[in-house]
Length: 60
Image (cartoon, rainbow, N blue to C red; front, top):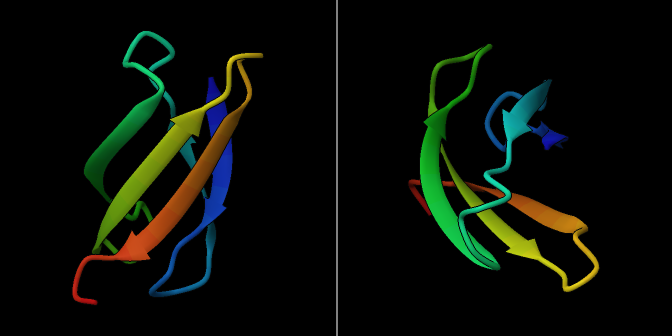
């Protein structure tokens, strides 16, 4: 499933893909497609299948 997030560095809206088979709690690093800085992505998937995606600066 595709989710839209705001890059915590440049503020631009970017799309990230959530691995639906990756479990209910996921963390990984993905580079922003606009500013190329590393974003730590935290995903929590509910029992109903909805995803909550949080983007964090990796230098915090």
